[in-house]
Length: 345
DNA sequence: AGGTTGTTCCGCCACC
DNA sequence: AAGGTGGCGGAACAAC
Image (cartoon, rainbow, N blue to C red; front, side, top):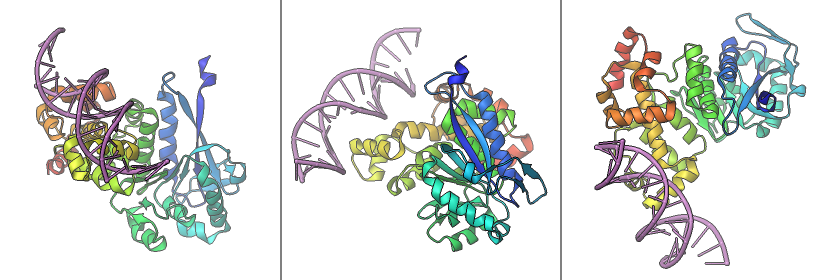
């Protein structure tokens, strides 16, 4: 009965001939699966409405031969797109055709209406062509980073990130990184518990081991942060065991404690303590996934000091205990062996 | 478990 | 005048 009143958020995928099929299917499955786990009550329950668009709406064939049919043509795209996802593929093929121009023109027109613009893999080149990366930080497939930088010099290319958020533009690295990004967006929209359930169903890791750019706390905070706080946010994410009290951080930021709290909230949408806690939670998750450390050491290395604090934070934010989380998400032992070496560095 | 202690956050006001 | 900034104090909460 109540289901018919639940709000919808449109996620529109844009594809083209010679697309990379996984760039579409991976994120698509993540959003679809999120619908199954979405809360039915709460502050503002909603579901994702998924549509797939192409220039003429006929069909599109992937660069590996898979064919996608019954697509929606661009001129019949819904007017209220929440999240616009541009899949990657063979950009050279796209640009040889008229399809490329139609797509970039459409993007230029419609992008301002969407809440989020997302690219997967070489989809970043399509955003670049539409001018959407100008002045933004962005990433793409590792093999394309130099090319992207040369063709769109106004963009700041981040070569070693799994995904990058800058205001409303989210770009991800090669192929399956799009799945990680989609999962992070679901986490942002529907919370950790839903993301956790989706990851479990799809047998994904909620957070990839290695690399600082993976942190979801960082993702949601940096999305709206100005230049002034970006370095500080990254520094915090890389130093969860440091003294991250308001006093210490305001020193580092070069302003008073009072003003620091005010500016931080204005820039990131959360208070300093909340951000610090999320960063430490992320680190703890990663350590649970990749090590067999006893919880006491793990808590300490995550900046949470004691097991009691670790457990409290997990219960509060995820609704499960650290051991429970580890049982679900720990990497296979032989993988964990390698990962724990880099994690302790 | 429950009290003590410390920290955070924010409204208020004053200063530049 | 007005907007950014800093200090104070109390309520709320976390840590122990």
